[in-house]
Length: 105
Image (cartoon, rainbow, N blue to C red; front, top):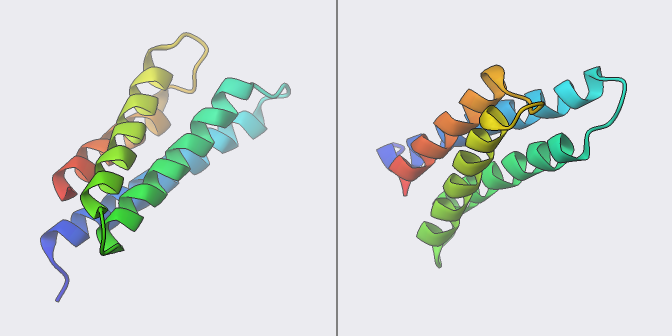
C-alpha cells in the first residue's frame, strides 16, 4: 500500500512534469527562442525530480522535497506574473505542483 505522502509526491511529480513540458512546448511553438522560458521549463522539471527523489531517498528526503516544491512554486508564480512569460495553464500547474509537493514533505 502506498502512503498518502508518497502519493502526494507522485501527484506533484506528474503535475510538474506536465507543467515543464508545456512550458518547453510553448517555447518551441514560438519562432524565437526565449532563454528565460527555457530555463523556467528546465527548472520546473528539475523541481519535479527533486520532489520525487525526496520521497524515495533515505537521507535528507524532506530537504529535497521542500526545495523542489519551492522551485516549482516560485517558477510558477514568476512565469504567471512576468509580462511575456508563459502564463496560463502551465504556470498554474507548476504552482499546484509546488503546493502538493509541500503537502507531501
